[in-house]
Length: 367
Image (cartoon, helix red, strand yellow):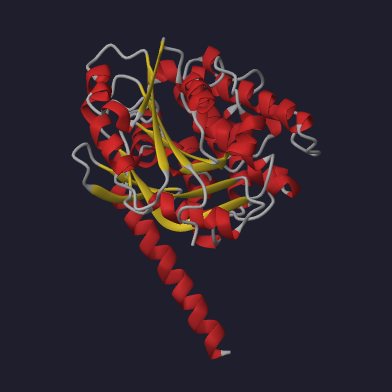
């Protein structure tokens, strides 16, 4: 067992989540694993967050800073941490009771691993689980050295959100600081990919945290917002350029040179939405509905993490968004892209995927 061998830091990043922050801190303090230090970075909140933090006294290490975004909170929090493993946690999420223990055990069993990730279950504002997971339950999460599969590494569906990520401090010394202008939000994307470019990854088939979807999340929203499509697309281009530079810095070859060609399903989804639902100046130069749809269809068909049925559903999504009238395309996107909106869809897809796996096993057994 990994107990009592290494200090684990639970690094909580917070910005104006006073309503949920206490539950996050309590979940970190109540872990079955010891020793644990809890570092809470308040990123310039203007609500009652500091009062919540001060109420825990010496049980936690508070870090107060001016607002700079999520990457800034990661950078500052890690500089103050002492753990050999850092377990990341968003302030509106909560860890499962044995999450740190299971992560520490995985690092103990895989000493070459740089990052351990686990699934995060989406919960409603009151904390009730919705049966939707990040990564989705039907996704085959990656384990191993992905530096030999740099195209696959860009598959956005592979990666957990912040509260499912744990990274060895030796790797974080190479990954951090993340550029704060690129990652004011969604720093978990840069954290996961950069960590995977430094060392092997271990993915655990467990629920390590609950992602609270309350309608005011900094990244996840409830509806497509036209004024943010353009910003999302351009930010993803800049992030790909940065990760290419980072790959060169850590000696990883064959990372996609052109950010426009990276087979990132999230990137292609955003590009399709920009063309279909945005204004003319929202799309990337040269993007057309036919061209982006074709790239999306191709990327969906080549996904390394799902079976044939899910690939077909993903292909169908790109095709439908492309051909449907804009109001219907928007409705489809709203129903399928946001976690709190897709509980029913995810359950149906999960059941269908499980049925397909059962039939394949039965067929193999019969032969």
